[in-house]
Amino acid sequence: MNQNFKTMQNDHLPIAIIGGGPVGLAAAAHLAKKNLEFILFEAGTSVGQNFLSWGHIRVFSPWRYNIDKVAEELLMETNWTSPDKNTLPTGKELVDNYFVPLSNHPMIKPNIHLNTKVVSIGRKGLDKMKTANRASKPFSIKVEENGKIKYYEAKAVIDATGTWNQPNPIGSGGVFAEGEQELKDHIFYGIPDVKLKYLDRYKNKNIAVVGGGHSAINVLLDLEKVQKKYPQTQLNWILRKDSLERVYGGKEDDALKARGALGVRIQRLVDSGKLKVHTPFYIHKLTKKENRIQIEGDLNGKTKTIENIDEIVSNTGSRPDLDMIREVRIDLDSALESVFDLAELIDPNIHSCGTVRPHGEKELRHPEKDFYIVGSKSYGRAPTFLMATGYEQVRSVVAYLTGDIEAAEIVELNLPQTGVCSTNFSSKKPVEACC
Ligand SMILES: Cc1cc2nc3c(=O)[nH]c(=O)nc-3n(C[C@H](O)[C@H](O)[C@H](O)COP(=O)(O)OP(=O)(O)OC[C@H]3O[C@@H](n4cnc5c(N)ncnc54)[C@H](O)[C@@H]3O)c2cc1C
Image (cartoon, rainbow, N blue to C red):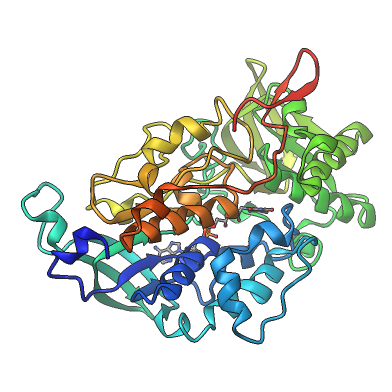
């Protein structure tokens, strides 16, 4: 047992996990395997709630990278059927074939609280400024559980709440563009199922997709299919990138073939002329004119208006919810809002890759003892997080919390070497700039 806990009067309390995504669930598996008491709070009606919002999309990493090792060991004790490790699941398949069966494991299920949104976390009876005896006080966790406010206590907290629920606005300065909130009924923040669930909303419409990452590319490739069936559908792509080469990524050289293929397919769509590209475009203002949207911004330093848009899909990244953890002492990078020590490994100003140097409990520590931010939230606003990175994070954190310092310090990441971390534009050949 962690030396710290031995002396604490709150040793009898559980460890709280916040968030039932892949990383929170992996933390649960590691704690269950070590017979440690835990409690998991998930805001949604199902585990993997965020994956369900883009359940129709196929991920780019095959199953073998998406399943935590200890979680798999637990699942093998049940009648779970392991998926073909070389295939690519959709978001929904990940939920149905992995997250839900794991959450139903008899050592995990009784500890999961669905429909339970954590509102705030603090140290019981101590505000943020008080230091004396701080580490010996339990965490007090305020939740809204099935609509009712409740309080729980825990001896440690693992915050795995991701960032997907906090989308960035489309305003280029990171704040809502003028008119953005007024026109919110015409803006979808996320990845709508344009081919099925939202077909009526998008078919034969003039659509602007904002953002330069894989989510925007996925939306555009789906909209291309809508356009084929409904030829009056018009597509616009608004990005801030100086060069589309960076957006296309490693293409055939990407070790994650499906991710590389996205680059190839979007380049083909751009080259076909069926998609109008506006880049580098910085959005400032949205106005409504005759029931359609005018998007005003800067294109190459000059004011430009994109006219007659019916619908906007925004994929401009997301940010961590910091309100919830305002009363705990955390150390974040001022630009990325990532855990401080991770920033130099993942800063997208320097790196554009999906792999990072292995890191664990030590890098994830905060001034607040026994409080950890893991999963995509640990990367803050940086968009390159992979599930496998989170599995190693929680393995290390749980090892530390059980007093196995040696295991906590040995961190290993088995991720594909992408070879596409950044692009050398002069030679047009991808070079490995990080990892
Ligand atoms: C289209 C798409 C494709 C992707 N493809 C891949 C891929 O191929 N490979 C890969 O490794 N990664 C991929 N990713 C990234 C992957 O989704 C993230 O790495 C992963 O979701 C991070 O897991 P997480 O558990 O940290 O957070 P999340 O999955 O975001 O889970 C967070 C959970 O916390 C819950 N929650 C939030 N706030 C609260 C609160 N206050 N109280 C209680 N619960 C709360 C949420 O409901 C959610 O269930 C992809 C992402 C997208 C969008």
